[in-house]
Length: 61
Image (tube, rainbow, N blue to C red; front, side):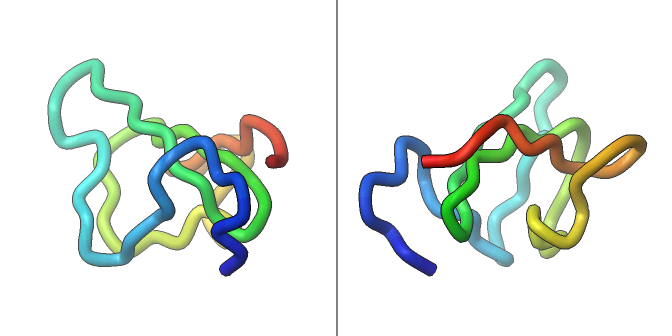
């Protein structure tokens, strides 16, 4: 992925996101920024975003 000017840490398949209550981490991935909605590990943001999905697309970078 293009790291260019990513404003958030790049998504990493081995990292656990959203494990702590209220921790809606943000990541950058493939030109987009995403916010986790609940616990996630290994769920690639661009393949798992949208209504009722683990990630929400919050814009491009």
